[in-house]
Image 1 (tube, rainbow, N blue to C red):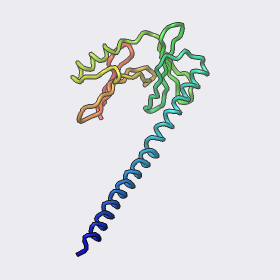
Image 2: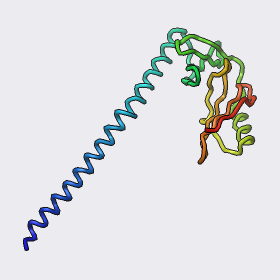
Image 3: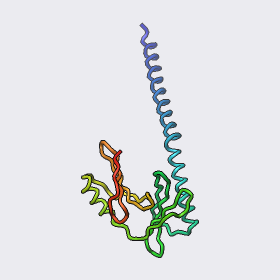
Image 4: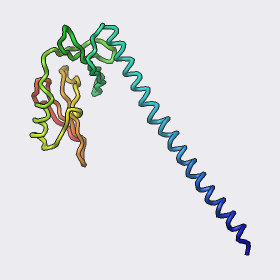
Amino acid sequence: MDFTNEKKKQSNLGSNLILLGLVILLVIVIFYVIFVHLPYNDHQRELDSIRTSIIEKDKLNYDDYFMEYNRSKTYYIIRVKIKGKKTYLAYNDKKKLVDKYSDEPVSKSVIIADVENRVKETVSEKDIKVGYEDDQFRYIVKYQTDNSLNYLYYTLDGKFVKQYRL
């Protein structure tokens, strides 16, 4: 019996399995880059371009909040300072100003307290965004439980509007 041949066959089999594993890993990485990472980065660049064009076109004093809000229509929400006052502006998908909110919105802590009282779930400020729906600015609170994805909508003055559970 030749043990040298057996060791070579086992060594080749081990090398082939390692090579196969590396090829599978490479295919997974390429799939992720092409179908997840690149589209995400392209969309982020597009949003940066839209934000920049709105700021430059209207000569706005940007205040570090920009969000794309998609429902039945797409709106771009941007927070700016006008005469030192924080103001939310809503633009449609053609980058035309459709509404502005210059009143002082209720604190997010008030919204958090109402959400926690209403649904008995803990949320944080990062779960709250400003959107634009039904021709009004809204706080949108998004949180997830084990069984569902939940959205609560409030006016910027703190009134509860509606809730969805998906």
